[in-house]
Structure formats: C-alpha cells, structure tokens
Amino acid sequence: MNERLCIEPADATLGATVTGVRLAELSEREWRSIEAAFHERAVLIFPGQHLSDDDQAAFGRRFGELSIEGQPFTNQNPDGSVRPPDDPTVQLLRGNEGWHTDSSFQPISAKASILSARKLPSRGGETGWADMRAAYEALEPAMRERIANLRAYHSLFHSQAKVGQGSESMVNGLAQMQADGRAGTGMSPGDTPRYEAEVEQAPPLRPLVKAHPVTGRPALYIGRHAYGIPGMSEEASERLLQELVDFACRPPRVLEHRWSVGDVAIWDNRRVLHRARPWDSSEPREMFHVRVAGDPATETGL
Ligand SMILES: [Fe+2]
Image 1 (cartoon, protein in one colour):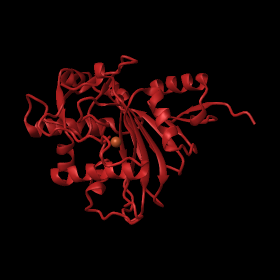
Image 2 (image 1 turned 45 degrees about the vertical axis):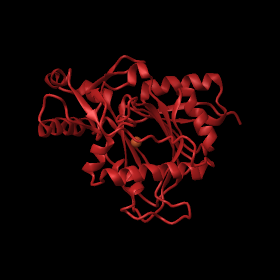
Image 3 (image 1 turned 30 degrees about the horizontal axis):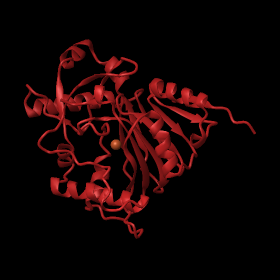
Image 4 (image 1 turned 120 degrees about the vertical axis):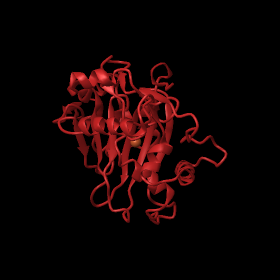
C-alpha cells in the first residue's frame, strides 16, 4: 500500500497533524513539505512513529545542529521506581507545566524541540502550545507600541524559584537529568553534559518581540523564564509579563495534544510557548527529547 503524506491543520492558529509518512525514512520531497509546514504551522504532530533515539536525533539534525542530542524526561529512577514529588528532577519537570520557550535562559535559545512519548500516565500529561505570532498580531496597537522596545531577562533560577525550587535543588536536578541521559544512551560520566546549567550571574536579556528569522513575522517572546524588564519595578514587570501570557495563551491560539506512545511532536521555539499538563505523580511518564540549537546570528541574548 502506498501511503501519501497528509498535513492536516489543527483547528487553531497553529499546529498540524502529519500522517502518511515515516520520519525514519523521509524522502527529499517529504522533507521539503515538512519543513514548509513547520514554518507555516509551528507545531507538527506525527502520530505512531515509534522512533529510536538515533532516528529522533537524525530527524532533529535535518533542522540544524543539536543542543540536546537525546534526553529522557522522566519521573522514574533507573530501577523503575517512581521519584517522589520533592525529587529535584520531578520539581524541574513540574516547572515545565508553566508556559515557556526552551533554552531562553541560555546564551543561545533553541530553534526547535522534538518530543516523543515513551511511557504515559493513564490520564493527564498532555502537551500544550500557544501561538505567539498570532498573539502579537491580536494585541491592541497601544500594547504593541508599549512593548516594542522592551526587553526581559530570562533565568531558570528565577522561574524555578517561583515554583518553589531553590538553586541547589535545581542544579542537582539538572545533574540527575544528565545521568538519566547517560543511563539511557550508554554515555560515560566523563562525557560532555548535554543539558548545560546556565550561569546564574549572567542571565540573557531578550526583546519581548522577536522577528522570526525565516518568515520575518514578529512574535511575542515571553514565558515563565522572563523577568526583570529594565526600567520597570519588579512588580510592574511581573504584572506586564503575566498579562501578556494570559492574553496570548488562549483560544484560538492554543493547541493541546493527548499523547499515545510512539507519537512525535516538533515545535518552533521562536514562535510558540509550550507547557506540560499535570498528571498523577505516582504514575510514570517518560518523554524523549531532542533539541535543535538556535542560529547564533538570531538567537543570541544580550
Ligand atoms: Fe520545554
């Protein structure tokens, strides 16, 4: 039977479901269609792919150099036991339940992120995305003018502190995640860590409005890591950033995916925010993650 590539836009300003294709065996023509759909819809969902770690990394490399070649996001220990809610890794995963864009707290923010579902809880644990291009376009002109030249700092220390995780626990959680990756991929402890902790003293400063490097279209660049707009009080900055997130992350600009094991999703961090939805923490959930590095010419913070 000959399958045909089918790209079905979601009922929102972003997102599409892609079927009739094997990501592990893409033809050049299929790849070109997928890349075009990625720029057009920003989030692509590929049901039932069941990619190996290597195939997922290879798919990521089509989009560019990887900053994370393969990282399990899991609340399970290597022995299969479920980590308790106060475990540092679990606290980091819980932080991801707030709207954010990946690596915005690092010197070069991410271009794209790819998740695949490996182990799922019986309910909850969906992933949501919100369209920051459509949000920017829907803002009142006065708000667009107000934020045109504003910038915010981005810090994981800041965002995790807001959800109750101190810096020591956070650093331990990042180290544990690196160990999870090594356990899963056979890397030795001496290998270069792929989930690099930020430098607390020098959080990058990024504009609130970002022009997309391919389409040129402006989008809000905000989320839970953003704070401390220079020239504003801490409270006023927090209020404005929260107001923007509340406005941006609502229909028709949001999409949520209920995962089945084997599904793959990719999204454009330069245009969307995303979040994990809560699930019963006594149940295991494992997602496998590959991250595509941003272009230093357009994704470098100040
Ligand atoms: Fe994320």
